[in-house]
Amino acid sequence: MRRIELLIEQLSLVEHILEARFIQERSTQTQTVIDKGYRVGKALKETEKLVEWNICSRKSG
Image 1 (cartoon, rainbow, N blue to C red):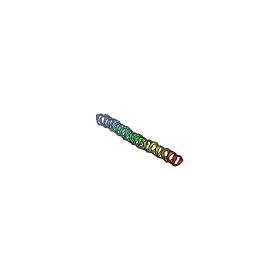
Image 2: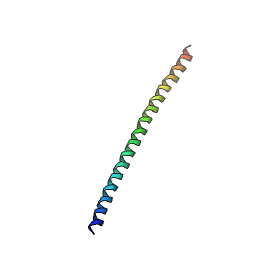
Image 3: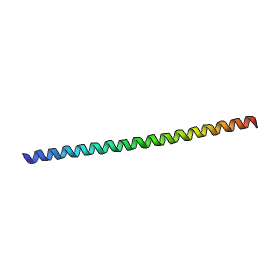
Protein backbone atom coordinates (compact mmCIF):
# COMPACT_ATOMS: atom_id res chain seq x y z
CA MET A 1 0.00 0.00 0.00
CA ARG A 2 2.83 2.38 0.85
CA ARG A 3 4.36 1.74 -2.57
CA ILE A 4 1.14 2.88 -4.26
CA GLU A 5 1.10 6.04 -2.14
CA LEU A 6 4.68 6.83 -3.15
CA LEU A 7 3.86 6.29 -6.82
CA ILE A 8 0.86 8.61 -6.53
CA GLU A 9 3.06 11.28 -4.91
CA GLN A 10 5.64 10.90 -7.68
CA LEU A 11 2.96 11.16 -10.35
CA SER A 12 1.64 14.28 -8.70
CA LEU A 13 5.12 15.83 -8.73
CA VAL A 14 5.59 14.92 -12.39
CA GLU A 15 2.22 16.48 -13.18
CA HIS A 16 3.24 19.75 -11.49
CA ILE A 17 6.58 19.76 -13.30
CA LEU A 18 4.86 19.24 -16.65
CA GLU A 19 2.35 22.00 -15.89
CA ALA A 20 5.18 24.38 -14.98
CA ARG A 21 7.04 23.55 -18.19
CA PHE A 22 3.88 24.04 -20.23
CA ILE A 23 3.26 27.44 -18.61
CA GLN A 24 6.88 28.44 -19.19
CA GLU A 25 6.69 27.41 -22.86
CA ARG A 26 3.44 29.32 -23.37
CA SER A 27 5.00 32.36 -21.72
CA THR A 28 7.99 32.14 -24.07
CA GLN A 29 5.70 31.81 -27.09
CA THR A 30 3.61 34.76 -25.94
CA GLN A 31 6.70 36.93 -25.48
CA THR A 32 7.91 35.95 -28.96
CA VAL A 33 4.57 37.00 -30.46
CA ILE A 34 4.70 40.30 -28.55
CA ASP A 35 8.26 40.96 -29.72
CA LYS A 36 7.45 40.17 -33.34
CA GLY A 37 4.29 42.27 -33.16
CA TYR A 38 6.33 45.18 -31.84
CA ARG A 39 8.82 44.82 -34.69
CA VAL A 40 6.05 44.64 -37.29
CA GLY A 41 4.37 47.69 -35.78
CA LYS A 42 7.63 49.62 -35.84
CA ALA A 43 8.24 48.64 -39.48
CA LEU A 44 4.72 49.73 -40.41
CA LYS A 45 5.23 53.14 -38.79
CA GLU A 46 8.51 53.59 -40.66
CA THR A 47 6.82 52.59 -43.92
CA GLU A 48 3.98 55.05 -43.30
CA LYS A 49 6.51 57.85 -42.75
CA LEU A 50 8.31 56.97 -45.98
CA VAL A 51 5.04 56.95 -47.92
CA GLU A 52 4.05 60.31 -46.45
CA TRP A 53 7.48 61.72 -47.29
CA ASN A 54 7.25 60.41 -50.86
CA ILE A 55 3.77 61.89 -51.32
CA CYS A 56 4.87 65.26 -49.92
CA SER A 57 8.01 65.35 -52.05
CA ARG A 58 5.99 64.54 -55.20
CA LYS A 59 3.49 67.29 -54.43
CA SER A 60 6.19 69.86 -53.81
CA GLY A 61 8.45 68.69 -56.64
